[in-house]
Length: 494
Image (cartoon, rainbow, N blue to C red):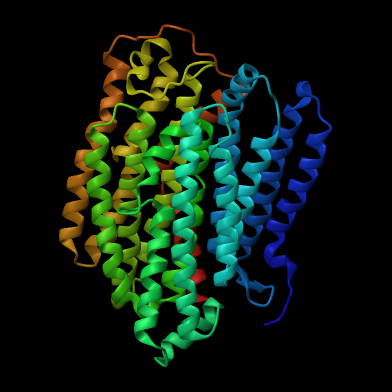
């Protein structure tokens, strides 16, 4: 398969050309016209999302560049969601960034360019069908994120967070690359389709293969933020500017989910018994430590960081359920539930950090739970949106978080692993405490800050649509769940 087939990477090519064009245009813009970079960045993401949606609608699986990349329904759907997630991130971040750029005396389009590079890296990861392409996309995304975390160079907390993220990120990349080298040594190929074929024959060095698998799972666990590879998550979430925290906590989860499917489900199904046990431990530990540690947090960004860790545990449960269910023919049940969960979780995360940035202003970061006191008295509408977001994270009906958790639990129960479902429910109840605590301070505490909430029209509209989407998807989850199921079925069947 030495075909070039540019059609398979058309969204990536479009975005790469757009990044180059926007970078050149931004060089000649005055500070007063810097909004043009913002508009062009949104347009580039919309164009890339449209091309990805076309790929999803065709339902075909197309390989390109010598079988190194693949365009299939799963990649199409996840790339659409990635572009939408980052576009929303830019909308929520604009007002926040402008306030701080005016304070710091600099206006530039670096944030938007770096954000687009993270998207390009994520899209490469999502479509990778070769170990080196996964690593190439991962590093492209990571290097841009390292720079974004340290975006406020005068802020010591941001610099500290960037150093921690860089050092631990390099360590995780080393784990993943070392694991890939072991898999290459055992199979003699970097092509994931060929690796799966060689392993299925049984003519491989099993100890070397297992050794490589351990390092691959460790690298994936770091990128997902699963325990015990979660050390970077709370510190980086808290120290990074809130706009960058959203860039970290949103779209990259979609790319991490995609490479987990590519590496484990598509490439290493013959080692299911081995990595299933690893993911079980990661899932239980993530739900336990994530939910328990979040209770003690007073910083809402740090609380949401531990919340992310616990939510990753649920996503891993879905993947485990898909694996076990494969024995009785229902292989897509858990996989599609996990995909639905990660998409809706990213949507909820976008809205929550959007609210945090909305309440922030020049010289003040609304990153403590106490900053949400009396929000209902200051703005009933934004308090209602935040209520929807918290209910979705907690899994309270009728918002979509409830259905997402229910679909994963149903998949777990269908495999007969009742003990896992019981653990998940118990830790979800613990998690409900710290989510509902935010609701309590919004509606029952007196505000400590009576300043007017200033929101631009685009942020108001985006947050309103975001909150409404959570409710609509909770009441009518069928279309998105059907799309996830179709993407998984067609991708695994190809």
